[in-house]
Amino acid sequence: MKQRVGFAFIRESLYRKLIKPSSAPPRHYCASSANVPPTPPLPKVPHSSKKGRLLTGATIGLLIAGGAYASTVDEATFCGWLFSATKLVNPFFAFLDPEVAHRLAVSAAARGWVPREKRTDLPILGLDVWGRRFSNPVGLAAGFDKNAEAVEGLLGLGFGFVEVGSVTPIPQEGNPKPRIFRLPNEGALINRCGFNSEGIVAVAKRLGAQHGKRKLETSSTSSPAGDEVKHGGKAGPGILGVNLGKNKTSEDAAADYVQGVHTLSQYADYLVINISSPNTPGLRQLQGRKQLKDLVKKVQAARDEMQWGEEGPPPLLVKIAPDLSKQDLEDIAAVALALRVDGLIISNTTIQRPDSVSQNPVAQETGGLSGKPLFNMSTNILKEMYILTKGRIPLIGCGGISSGEDAYKKIRAGATLVQLYTAFGYGGPALIPNIKAELAHCLEKDGYKSVHEAVGADCR
Figure 1: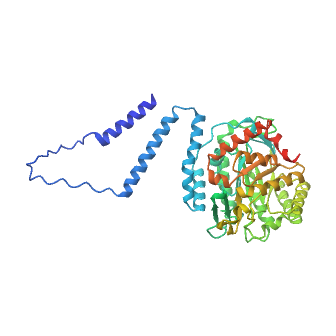
Figure 2 (figure 1 turned 90 degrees about the vertical axis):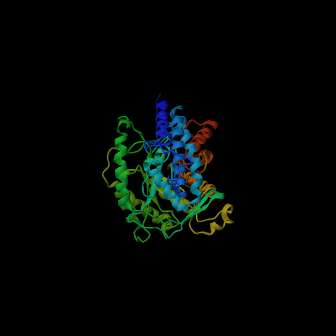
Figure 3 (figure 1 turned 180 degrees about the horizontal axis):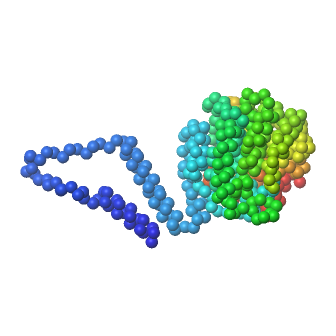
């Protein structure tokens, strides 16, 4: 009935504007009216106005069609249609400069101009890590939402967790542009952004506002009293990670990370020390055994000296590079076990150029390579680290994931959670439900009843 009334209103409006005669007196035209001045010609409509009217008409048509479609289907079906519809828009981003496209994507998510996942994740995808319940193990890696502008919109896409940053203590522009380069045929990117960041003060202000809003909206769905595992994050459904970086000109890396902990940890469900970006001079040297041990001790002390409630302090993770020797991996594993690091993210981008991209002229650009060409390298490092840590430390597999099968391979190689970045940039929102559905299918096909059962299966 509402739909009929809506269409009747639209029809009546169009009739009044386009069809119904004007109230002005009618003109009489005849062959003998020689003294009647000629009718002035209609003003020429500018070409841009015509385009605007066509675009407006098309938009109204889509809205009417979408509304009519929504009124005839259930919420889950309509949600699936919205995600699929993003495939029509996503190719247009390829015509834009990579950084401009990235900026537009973040702005769209920040303004809620992206679909919102209304369908519940399959139970087989749920898992408990660090005392929190993840609805699924598929997350968004740091680097996409560097300044925490779109947390709510990105979590709403159906990610199990979203990691913002890297965030530096003092605002910095990063490296000169252009600094992001596409390799679309290889499903890859090269970036040399260099920790471009608005700084911890701006990010803390933004996270504080979002934190309060999310907590207020979800207060009625908090975990039952006495429940040892908290469902979702501090502020509601979806887990939020904060990735910390150091300023390019800083001479005291530990002080930068400590400042990040003091300012941002109250909003984070987990923290990440990023010491593996190839675009900040000297940063990867912090992965050495002594340097890493000293750094982690200082950051852990800074976190633990703060006052925490019943939930305790957020877990502290370290993000490492894929360009590491066997000795480097052994040193990192030893430090992680000795200091009880809460997790490792494996891995960041690579400075290597695998054979699959070496012939592409863009591959000559300096910076870190991400995407499909990184998959095998990062997965091998992941598997090695799982063995070295004896499966005692949760690992996040990151690097080259573009399908549910890729995510499954990471999990079998030792990842408890996985992260996307480059594939999300190419595939858009429609990729997320596809990856989750395919991952669930892979688990069920091999007889697993949960993600945890499959973790490290290829290392046993």
